[in-house]
Image 1 (cartoon, rainbow, N blue to C red):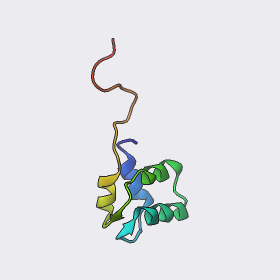
Image 2: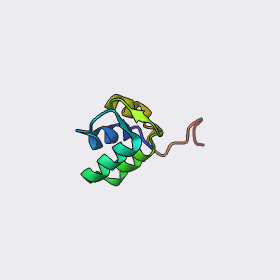
Image 3: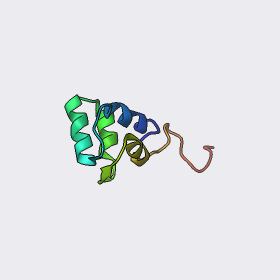
Length: 75
């Protein structure tokens, strides 16, 4: 995932009722017809119940964007 996935999740879930389970949130986003990257971000959420959008944003796995290899420089 990317550092923007929390933003994608937030946009995809605008108007969602909380608390909600991961499956309920994914179903809500699917019904809204959100884009594939946003659905992918939501599907990476751990199973569980989320009390707020902040809980969802905190739970979306984050990885840096870009093609850089962490841990050193290329020679």
